[in-house]
Image (cartoon, rainbow, N blue to C red; front, side):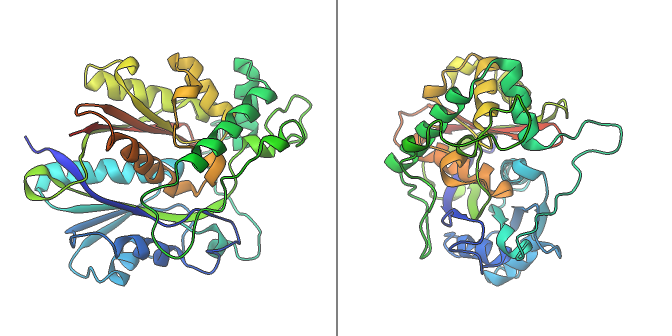
Length: 346
């Protein structure tokens, strides 16, 4: 049986829309992370949601000098990065090749005039809520107060400041994590709904970033001490997209005869505090014990890239953990899907 290990990882800084990396195209962000991979891969799988088209995976691979590598671009919205990793995992097991799973997102170059354009996530006849409205609905359904959401966001910022990423490359640095406790209770709801509780503090900002993880068979490469054990992508209720991480996690764990209590390191992409807190309620998780290095509420949410960035955060925690420690990285996806990746310390 082929054991698939992480041989390298890198990410750019996560910077706000129209800020430090505003002039860097999506393929250039990706190529920056590809340039530090230790081996030339046979395959590149890249997640992206709002790029210029033209198979950005191939464009970025060529920019990195990987002419002989095959390249495919995925769009699974906020789950694109973890889907790319999952498909790379399957490719390594199938072929024994070295594969790079990358992600890139550049809202700044996609929408240079500041006008955001969003495609539909479902066809006519299916629920397709605005993501903020969906988070507000989850907050109401699960009794998650504005105060609880903002307190969770403050925690994310603090932990992100306490644990700067080891994987950042390039000249820029993250510009999101900061002391936001002074903002508690001071920001109004994002929407005009009378029942809205999601504020700017409890919703992740739009950001630019790219990331990459290289995978290979354990017998053929030096590695960082983390093995990929499996992944699962599932469909769920499109009316409640923020909960879709729940069936992804439970299905993945069932595949491996595990319980959520077996998982020591758990990172759930923080598009909204309400969404993460609702998932915690569903899985009986303590919010103070997940996303221990901070998440998108602190850094920003470069949609496709957030999953791989979250996995790098999981890896950082696993590399200092005892052998056999298990980690899960998961994301809820617009349109009602969920994705999760299972990892283990070697």
